[in-house]
Image (cartoon, rainbow, N blue to C red; front, side, top):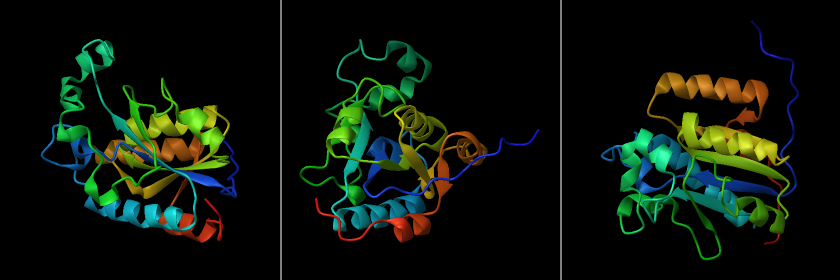
Length: 201
């Protein structure tokens, strides 16, 4: 069976960068949730600096559990999530992409950066007209956030060299599926070439 006919969208004039779950619990291979992602992290650093230099909106998400009552079903399925508590280094954003003052870190308890969070409201307040999504993991929280971005009526761009997954087959399959149905899967070079210049914060 072939994919549906689709159209690509251009990146808008005020895209927001959404860095999904680049916390130590996911970026450190020693974590039970982690994977080898140094190449993707390097690309994230480049994109982050490009958005900052243009005064474009930047948002981080981080999974964090502050009580045993949060996301009980999800956590019972994946017990490794229990390491992501506010007093643990695992829930802190990786120092390679350390958020600056004024760059929100959206705490979440589920895969999507939108579900049960303030992300939609903050994007609207910032006047974002499209989303550039990076981070971890492709088949999990990146996918969920990207699909929810579409469901909030944003043009969504997933940067394939700035996302990673513990499972290579899942990574490739989800990039294919996302591009076929929901978002534009692009390279960092394509994003950098399309970013508007001279935007004021």
